[in-house]
Length: 84
Image (cartoon, rainbow, N blue to C red; front, side):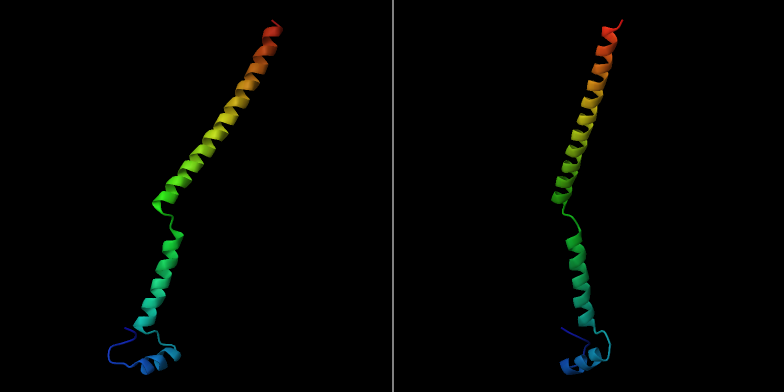
Protein backbone atom coordinates (compact mmCIF):
# COMPACT_ATOMS: atom_id res chain seq x y z
CA UNK A 1 0.00 0.00 0.00
CA UNK A 2 1.26 3.44 -0.85
CA UNK A 3 0.14 6.75 0.60
CA UNK A 4 -2.73 7.59 2.87
CA UNK A 5 -6.11 5.93 3.29
CA UNK A 6 -8.72 7.23 0.87
CA UNK A 7 -6.34 8.72 -1.71
CA UNK A 8 -5.88 7.41 -5.20
CA UNK A 9 -2.47 6.82 -6.77
CA UNK A 10 -2.60 9.95 -8.93
CA UNK A 11 -3.59 12.11 -5.95
CA UNK A 12 -0.70 10.68 -3.96
CA UNK A 13 1.63 11.40 -6.89
CA UNK A 14 0.49 15.04 -6.91
CA UNK A 15 1.16 15.42 -3.19
CA UNK A 16 4.59 13.81 -3.53
CA UNK A 17 5.60 16.08 -6.42
CA UNK A 18 4.66 19.06 -4.23
CA UNK A 19 7.09 17.80 -1.60
CA UNK A 20 4.88 15.91 0.81
CA UNK A 21 6.24 12.62 2.13
CA UNK A 22 3.57 9.98 2.12
CA UNK A 23 3.69 7.00 4.47
CA UNK A 24 4.56 4.53 1.70
CA UNK A 25 7.54 6.61 0.55
CA UNK A 26 8.74 7.02 4.11
CA UNK A 27 8.50 3.25 4.65
CA UNK A 28 10.54 2.58 1.50
CA UNK A 29 13.20 5.09 2.58
CA UNK A 30 13.37 3.64 6.11
CA UNK A 31 13.82 0.15 4.66
CA UNK A 32 16.70 1.40 2.53
CA UNK A 33 18.34 2.96 5.62
CA UNK A 34 17.83 -0.25 7.61
CA UNK A 35 19.38 -2.39 4.87
CA UNK A 36 22.40 -0.07 4.62
CA UNK A 37 22.92 -0.29 8.38
CA UNK A 38 22.57 -4.07 8.35
CA UNK A 39 25.25 -4.29 5.69
CA UNK A 40 27.60 -2.26 7.88
CA UNK A 41 27.29 -4.66 10.80
CA UNK A 42 29.74 -7.54 10.91
CA UNK A 43 28.19 -10.94 11.38
CA UNK A 44 29.22 -12.87 14.47
CA UNK A 45 31.29 -15.21 12.33
CA UNK A 46 33.21 -12.34 10.72
CA UNK A 47 33.84 -10.82 14.15
CA UNK A 48 35.26 -14.12 15.42
CA UNK A 49 37.50 -14.49 12.39
CA UNK A 50 38.76 -10.92 12.75
CA UNK A 51 39.42 -11.39 16.47
CA UNK A 52 41.34 -14.60 15.78
CA UNK A 53 43.40 -12.90 13.08
CA UNK A 54 44.25 -10.00 15.42
CA UNK A 55 45.16 -12.44 18.21
CA UNK A 56 47.51 -14.38 15.93
CA UNK A 57 49.13 -11.16 14.72
CA UNK A 58 49.72 -10.06 18.33
CA UNK A 59 51.18 -13.47 19.21
CA UNK A 60 53.59 -13.34 16.26
CA UNK A 61 54.69 -9.82 17.16
CA UNK A 62 55.19 -10.80 20.79
CA UNK A 63 57.18 -13.91 19.81
CA UNK A 64 59.40 -11.79 17.55
CA UNK A 65 60.08 -9.32 20.36
CA UNK A 66 60.87 -12.15 22.81
CA UNK A 67 63.22 -13.81 20.32
CA UNK A 68 65.05 -10.50 19.74
CA UNK A 69 65.33 -9.95 23.48
CA UNK A 70 66.63 -13.49 24.07
CA UNK A 71 69.25 -13.14 21.35
CA UNK A 72 70.30 -9.77 22.74
CA UNK A 73 70.61 -11.19 26.24
CA UNK A 74 72.48 -14.26 24.96
CA UNK A 75 74.94 -11.94 23.18
CA UNK A 76 75.49 -9.88 26.32
CA UNK A 77 76.01 -12.93 28.52
CA UNK A 78 78.30 -14.58 25.99
CA UNK A 79 80.45 -11.42 25.95
CA UNK A 80 80.46 -11.24 29.75
CA UNK A 81 81.49 -14.87 30.22
CA UNK A 82 84.48 -14.45 27.87
CA UNK A 83 85.86 -11.53 29.94
CA UNK A 84 85.54 -12.62 33.62
